[in-house]
Length: 406
Image (tube, rainbow, N blue to C red):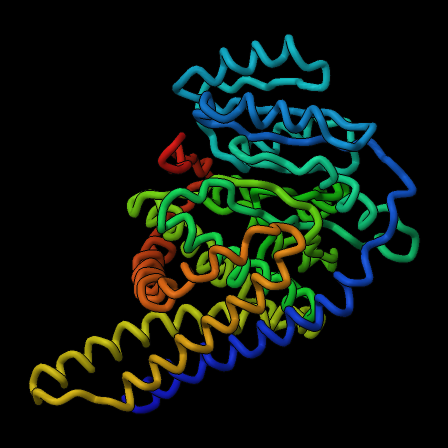
């Protein structure tokens, strides 16, 4: 039991230091120096999978039609929506010449929608964006040079952008503003320093079409197509990069139920990726993927260990009537380090989201609430990943929670 307690303490402490150091190195080595300029403007196809998006799709398409980039098209795929998405898309088609629409009778999942959009696309560079997100006008100007710059982008298979949260009216949303900066942005920076990333952000990512074809496209029977295709690309030795200047404003869940469902799906996708790609340890050529795999596996073990140690501690306190002060002090110390990590991440991200630091005080809820919540999420996702049967069928999707005002 003592070994488990030590792991629960030292693992997040060590990884917090790694994320902060890696994020700072990425900032000084890459972000401050800037990215290659846009000297070529190849044709880009923007793919927008849609399922029950009547409340958001018009705004998304309107912003996509106003990008500061000359050569692109928009392909929206209505994946068997049950609401008025079909009607909305037909109206939008008449308004925007760039827009083409594919209508499917039945919901077959996001990966299948992307697959069909790829078949219909004209561009070699494909940009995937969620149908409830708003892409920054200059995003393509930052993503495209990763693919086109000579001696810099020949092996780039994907570039993941920088998702920022636009609904910030509730406590849950404000804590996620801090989380996306610290737990997502900072980690992606560090993973890029190591050379490989765990996953692209499905809400905003650019792909090289030939790279997708080389790795046999998205797995249409998995619930997290972004995680799966990231590993497939990197196992085919395509480079996956993080571009913080490619900003996309997204909506996040603001109800506990919606947040729970989203995080269970993400955790399940991560576990399924580990189960599928354990063979990275059998080939030395995959050595740069090994640290990412080990860290992800350790995070899952940590969630189980933390819940177990907490239960044992509560039983000991109730049975003995005594408080274990060293345990509470160690928890306080971890929370303090977590808050420092949040400040480092949000300080770096202030150049992309100038008002982000005003949400810093909400970060205090993360170690007090999120840690237990996320640990329970992982425990729920483990049996779902282990027991899920893949019969070659499509992994369909449900309408997500998009905030209290949507």
